[in-house]
Length: 626
Image 1 (cartoon, rainbow, N blue to C red):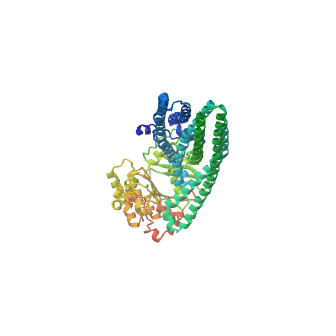
Image 2: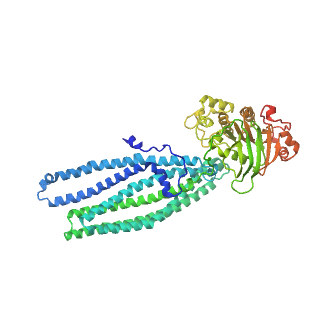
Image 3: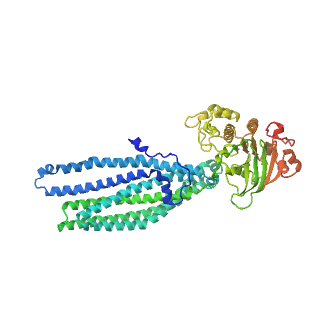
C-alpha cells in the first residue's frame, strides 16, 4: 500500500530543461503542474475530514439533547441504538479511513516526491549554468539554495492545500451549524474572522520580508562556513583560524539578528491570536448561554457551539504557526528563485549540431573578449593552428593565455569574432560535443569526492576496469593507487579521494588527472601547467607518456617553465591580450624579443638545462623537459 502511494509521483520523469519563471506564483506552478491532480485529492480528503470532525461535535450536542429528553434512561440504547451505531461507525471507521488516505497522500505521495522533483529539476538547470555563475558565488550557498528551495516549496503547498484548506472548510461548516442553531451565534465567529484577517493583513507582509532576509542570511552563513572548510589547508597554512572565526561570526550574528526580528513578530502574532481566540470562546459561550436562558436554543446547542469554539481556538494556534511557516518557506523559495532562476549566459544555438573533429584545426578570427569589462584583455586576435600542430602559449601572468583556452572551451561567449574547429563555428555546435573533443589537464586539479576509479573513468564513462588500470599505469599512478586506503576500508581503485582530492598529494592528483585525459583520448589536447605539480623524477617519467598522448592530436600547452614547452612545433608569445611573437624556440631566441627575455630570466630551479637548439616536436620525435 505504501509503495503504491509512493509511486503516484515520479520525481525523475522526463521533462524539458528550461529556465524557471522569475515570478513567485509562476515559479510554484512550473514545478507543481505535473502533480496538481494529487493536490486535488488532498483537497477532497481535507473537505471530507473537516466535515467529519465538525460532525463529531454535532453528535455530542445531539447526544446531550437525546439524554436530556429521555424519559426512561434504561431504554436509551434501545430507542436510539441506530443513531448511536451510525455515530460510532463515523468515528471508528469513516474517520480513520479518510485521515489514513489523507496521510498517505501527504506523507507517501507528496512530501518526499515533491521536494525531490524540485531539487532534481533545479539541479539539472543549475548544472548547465555558465562557469562564471559558479565563480561568482559560494558553492555551498548554491547547493543550500537548491536543497532548501525544494523543501520550502513543497512545505508551502502542503500547508496551503492541507492546513489552511482544512481550517477553511472547518470554519465554514461550523458557521453553517451556528446559523442552523441560531443565526445570532454567528456574530462572535464573524467578528473573530474579521479580527484574524486583520492580524494576517498586518503581520504576514512583515513576516515575508523578514523571512526572505533570514533565508538570504542563512545562505550566506552556510556559504562562509563551507568556504572555510573547503579551503581548510589555506586557513591553517596562513594561521587564519581566528580570522575565519570572525568571518563566520559576522554571518552568524547577522542571521541571528534577522531571525530574532522574525521571532519578535511571531511572538506578537501569537499574543494577538490568544487574545482574539479568548474573545471568541467567551463571546460564543456567553451568547449561547443567554440564548438558552431565553429558550432560543437547546442545552445540546451550548455543547456544540462551545466545543467548536474551543476547537477553533486550538486550531487557531496551529494555523498561526502554519502561516508563519508558510511565509518563512515563501521567503526561502523567493530567495532560491532569485538566485537560481537566472538565465543561462552561455547557451546552445537553436539548431546546434554536434562538433565533428576530423583533423583538429583551430582558428581564432578577430576575437575580442574582455570578461564584460568593455575594454582590455583580448582585442582583435587572430590565430591559426594547423591540424596536429603542437603549440606552446608563453607570456607573463595576465597576458591572456588562460582566457584563450577558456573561450576555446566556450566557458564564455565572445564579444566579437569567432573560433572555428575544423571550419565549424563553436558557437553553433553543442557545448557538450565541443568539450567532449577537448582533453584538458590543469595545474590546479580538483577531483570528485568519489573513488579513484570513478575519477579516472570520468574521461570515458563506459571504460572497463582494465582500461582504467592501463591509463593509470601510463600516467605512473598505478603504484601509489594500489596502496591507497580510505577511512571506510576501501582500498586501491575503490578508495575515496576526499573532497576535491584533498586526501592525495598534488602530484598524485595530477597523475590521476593525466590518467583521466589519457582515457578520454580527445583529438584536441590542452595542457595548462600540466606537470607543474610533479617532482622532476616523476615529470621526466611522464613526459614520454605525454608525448604519446599528444601524438596525432592538436595540442595547446601553457607553461611558465619555458623548458617544458620549448620543443613545441610553434610558440605563441602573448602580452596584454595580443600575440607579440610567433615562431619556434630557436627562431624566437634569435629575435631577441620578449620570449628571449623571459628565457634568459629563468635559471636555477626553473631550468633543468638550457638548450637553445631545441627543435620542434614534429622533427625531434619526442616531448622532453629541458
